[in-house]
Every structure is written in C-alpha cells, then in structure tokens.
Amino acid sequence: MPATEDANALGRYLRARRELISPDEAGVPDQGNRRVPGLRREEVAFLAGISSDYYNRLEQGRDKNPSEQVLRSIARALRLDEEATAYLLQIAAPKGPQRKRPRRPEKVSDGIRTLIDSWPLTPAYVHGKYMDILAANDLAVALSPFNAPGHNGILAAFLEPEMRELHQDWDDMTARVVPYLRSIVGADIHDPRLVEIVGELTLSSERFRTLWARQDVKHKTTGTTLFRHPQAGPLELRYEKLLIPGAGQTLITYHAQPGSASEERLRLLASMHAPDRAGSSPAAADQPARGNTTQ
Image 1 (cartoon, rainbow, N blue to C red):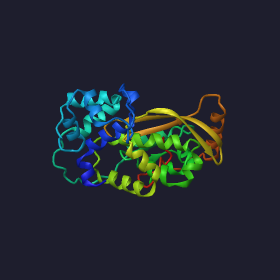
Image 2 (tube, one colour; image 1 turned 90 degrees about the vertical axis):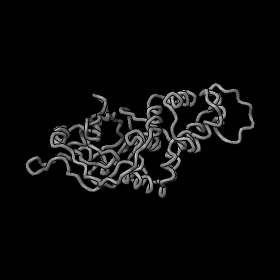
Image 3 (cartoon, one colour; image 1 turned 90 degrees about the horizontal axis):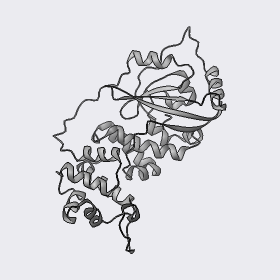
Image 4 (cartoon, rainbow, N blue to C red; image 1 turned 135 degrees about the horizontal axis):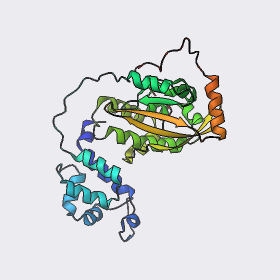
C-alpha cells in the first residue's frame, strides 16, 4: 500500500463508492451515453448540495479537510449505510505525524484460552486486528487446519487451495472477509502488518484485487457458512463474532442448528479429534502468523 495511496484514502474511497451506485439507485435520471459505471462527479455533488469543483478537489486529494456535515451529505448521496459512513468519517479525520511503532506480539488472556478449551463441541478461535490467528481449540483446528495459530485468516482464504475445497460457499465467504478486514482495521491503513498482508494478496490474487478495490466496509457479526469437510461431510454452521473488549481481538465460534444433521456430524468430528486430556495442552500458544477458516 504505497504512501501516495494512503495520502488520498478519502479520494479513493469516494471514487470507488461513486462507481458502485447506479443512477437509478441514487434517484438520478439516466441520460444514457455513460462511459463509466456509476454516478458522475457532478451528480454526487448535486445530490450532496456542494459545488462540483469542491467535490472534485475532495476526490482528487486536493482538499483534505471537509467538515462532518459535508461528509454526511456525501454519504447520503452515495447511499452509504451507518457502518460505511462511520468509515468515511474515520479516513477523512485529520492525521498527525505517523511515528513508526514497534509491533508488539499479540497475546490472548489465560481466561479466554480456558474458556474456548472448555467448549469441546464448539469450534472457537481468536484472531487479532489483522486476522492473525492467536488461539484455537481442538475442534476449531479439526474443522480447518488454517484455524491454528500461526496462520492468518484472510491470507488463507485467498491463497490456500484447500480453502476452496473446504468452503462450499467460497465465493460468498471471500466476498464477506474483505469488507470485514476493512471494518476492523478502520483508518489505520498505514500499519506495516496491513501493508504486508494487502501487498501479498494484491500480487497473488485477482479476486482479492477486485474485492479490495470496491472499498466495501461491513462488520458482519453473525451468519451461516457452508463446509465440505473431508471427514465430517457437509456442514451448515452458524458463526458468531464477539469482540474482546480492550484487546483488539475477536472470538469466533461455530454451532449447528440443534437436532440437525450438521450437529450430528459436528459431534462426530469432535469425537474423532477429542484430545487425551491427561496429556493435552491448553489452546495452542501464540505463534508468528501466516493464512484460516474465516467468514
């Protein structure tokens, strides 16, 4: 993520969102002869009640201090939801000088480790701000080896071929995970770890490049995902994402509908991978990160 991109994050976001909304969605008469997708700059300016010149300066990065009122007017013109509007306000906020901060190892508390280890029938793992896997219980790793500490959720989703086989809904899953990463990172797009992740994915995955360019922001905390597990067979599981206060970490759990075939298969998988409690260790320890099952 080059410094020039970081410098005009607001402009890139406005342009991406402008190109994604149709005239019909925005309530603008379509006169035809459109050479580019989405709305024209002057149409956004008109809907937001600002001058075309001022909107152009914002999108081109020549004006970096719009008021909150102006930003909210643009958000309404672009039909941004509450989460996308909050992201817009974040990236437009004035930035002080960026000092290079040493990256500290992320640690999961003993209490959280004990908690997820106490759920033998519930796959559960913890990831950090950039989706590095920090801890996981046995069933989470049995569900996907990429849930183990040392992997990174978004790298695995796009770069590990096994993920396409494991996730029956791979297209939907990858379409969810990119907006999710943007939502948890917020305006902190200069962080070296994020630059490293986005750089690797941009070079290696055309699908990631397409999804990242959309600038979607969505923190979906619950939903359903479909697995095609090599041992347990097809699994339809509900996921929940729970923010761990103050840690910048997220706890993710899976469960099946009670009484369903998926619940029976999940129990079977748990029995196949039940640890020897006499000699087992707690949820795996923190390790350097690389690619996981994600949402």
